[in-house]
Image 1: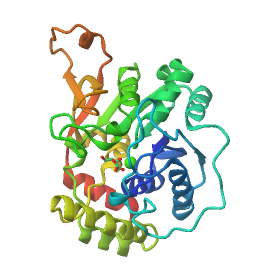
Image 2: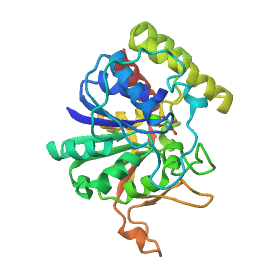
Image 3: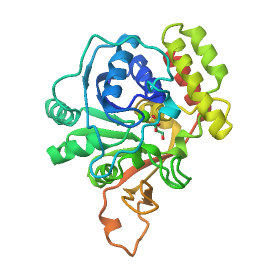
Length: 312
Ligand code: BDR
Ligand code: CA
């Protein structure tokens, strides 16, 4: 079983990813760490605790950073995810609370307790991961993998011509995470935007699982309204699920090895830049960067059926 900590800013697609992690038999979800992004970090923590109750899973929640490493915070994405981050679907407030450690301290401690065993799946801005590297740079050698939803490699961004929201919300943190020697797997918009889950899909999911399926379907309705008005899509893109599903069904993705960097200023701020392994550069710094993996395509039909079956 994959021992997974999800770093998250729930978020409708975050909720879809958390539900997947809990439902999948090969994943042992050991904690959620929270981050600002779609909502504030305190809202993210409240949502994380409430979603665990709704999905019937007990695990630690550790609250993360309130703001980016260097920059002023960007506005939250209430227009995409609703005023409560969950498509304005009312979920009962949890009676549980977060552990006393910060998310970064929690990541450092857990990877000390279980060296080489933990997959971190980061589906929000990367500030907590960067803070963990600050506290203890050797964390990089203790994680099994770092699967990240973020960036846009060969296609335009979703918040600027070149930037994707998670990276743009804290580009300095992203750059620190990409420059570290841990096994990063990036799920950029190149792969995530291939998948659009239709209202029909969610109606069937609701029939198949009247509890979890209904909750996801209710949230998806709000999310799909954003996608319809913004991009004319009939359905919604479950970005964050793709980073989780890489752990369980890696074979359905097209992958490419290479160095990844994030632009930290200027008009390209938040852009992810990719240099495939072996491609010569005149700038020597690119040859010294760690080699990671970028996911660039996916078997859409397989993925959608697999997501359906896992939740159903
Ligand atoms: C990413 O940004 C957030 O709005 C989503 O939850 C996802 O993590 C997509 O760009
Ligand atoms: Ca997210």
